[in-house]
Amino acid sequence: MRICSIGECMVEFSNIQKDIFKLGYAGDTANAAIYLSRLGAKSSFVSSIGSDDFSNKMLTFLKKEKVQTHNIYKSKNKTIGLYVIKNNNNGERNFFYWRSNSAARTIFENVSHKILYDQISKYDAIYFSGITLSIYNQKSISKFYKVLRLLKENGVQIYFDFNVRLNNWESKKIAQQTILKFSRISDIIFVTKDDLNNLDFKNYKNIIKKNFKNKITIFRSGYGDVEVYNKSCFKKYKFNFNKKVKDTTGCGDAFNACFIYNYFTNKKIEKCLELAHRLGKTVANFKGAIIDKQHFNPKFYAN
View (tube, rainbow, N blue to C red):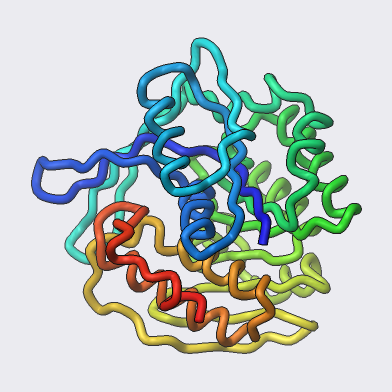
């Protein structure tokens, strides 16, 4: 499988003990790119970085994870973003961001959509998220949409994770309109209960039926509950969940990556969900979005 993830990778400080933080590199689509690589996919990441030390170290980190980085562009006078995670006793998170000067926001200002299309059209699939969209201005969003339309017309699969962070958007209305627009050209859509609440999409089944025909929609409502819309039907699944977790950061990204990899290798949806949930549970047992390789056995998540 050849898959290209598009978005932002940031400096991550995760709270491992009181007033003690661990430095890492993460970001929703970057996390997925790493887990896809570990599972065995030829995984590439598309973004823009600065020329600062953190940008260079992040690039080295992705290369060590065998994520292809030739589609990461350097931007002068920019840096990569930074975020801090603080967890409550249930492992739920509070995020604090510093990303106003992030190079990833400017990728379409530095690279034409035609060049980007030429670079990524050889992949089997493209993965992006609502966070990807939220960091771009409207002109960049239009360029990105053109790229995806061209890719889809030429047989590339489009996978989209809602991952709504309203504080990144200019307004809720723009978020709603943009996310629905990109959903309509996607083949697989990942959405959570929080995403729907953030967008005020109250009757999600009607929204899915109206906007996402002939698509697979994976809806996670928490506590091991998953509902899938496929071939005009909804089907519910229930999996065991961790009653105590250390950190839920990256769980959804790992889940999505694992589902995509197994679905692409022609496993049945129920098996894809089972393996994806297994990886998500594992990630929740550790601090930070990317677990150490010693705790990751690809055969356990892609058997």
